[in-house]
Amino acid sequence: MGHGGGGVMSAELVENLFLPAFGGAPDTGLGDSAVLGIGGARLAFSTDSYVVRPLFFPGGCIGDLAVNGTVNDLAMSGATAAYLSCAVILEEGVETSVVGRVAQAMGEAARAAGVEIVTGDTKVVESGHGDGIYINTAGIGLVPPGVDIGPHRARPGDVVIVSGGIGLHGVAIMSMREGLEFGVEVASDSAPLGGLVRDLLAAAPGVHALRDPTRGGLAASVNEIAAASGTGVVLREGDIPVPPEVANACSVLGLDPLYVANEGKLVAFVARADAEAALAALRAHPLGADAAVIGECVAEHPGMVVARTPFGGTRVVDLPIGEQLPRIC
Image 1: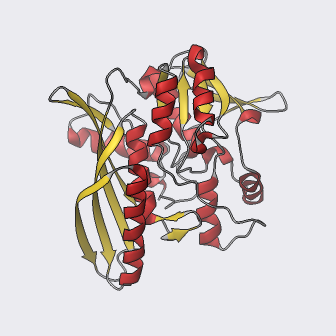
Image 2: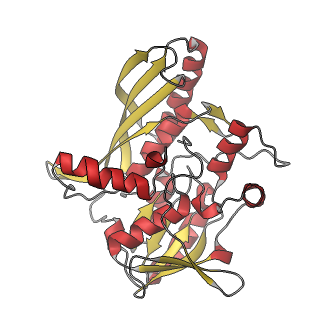
């Protein structure tokens, strides 16, 4: 299960098994989406599979998650998502009313994100060989001229910004799956980030890298950018927005909020000269109202992420080995 967690074990699986079989790393790199030149246009292309359990949770379900997740992966390349495919694997015995609810949620999410679901596939597996419904979505989108965003472009001096409170999706799934109560319902932050990214890029052309911190949380995303760019990152732990309900849940369960999954947040590495404009643009959008500057890139300790604690200490923020909570997306 750890190989599916988005951390060190996932990276080892890709690097040691899949990449050698496929002929090595692609020229487009290993980001959330590949940017491809076709007929004079630049297209972003991404695919993702969703195996979340339970199928329905506060703030969403596997259907809208499957749309939002792929839309967001495209947005992290600066692309405006246009078209999605949808492949659905159904377990024998799942009620058609459940499938209908999921399909309806996908349609509503696609309309909200401004994309069309244009092709797909359906398969059924025997009872006991699935968890009701698995979904794969792939998407394509257009990258505007002049936009060049990638994890390798982060550089010393860049400011690190997160678009809002972290950890809500992972805690929402955990509370439903384990029947936990924290005194208040925790809802997933699942949302399409295309509009937020468009506003950000219009206000701050100095955006160098974007990532939506899903599996492995904020810690995994920042580590991946640090490793790809060869820069060090210093986070200010006290400035990272952690909602009280997430902080309380993580305290009870012994989890670190930096490693808990999100589905409606982004982390941006922005040139210092554009940092104020970027922060203002994020805060002007409903999905970025709680955006905050949380750190910076440095020349020291290249490829390593550290956090300065509110007590004046410093700790290393490693890439997670596996996943604190599997099957969250």
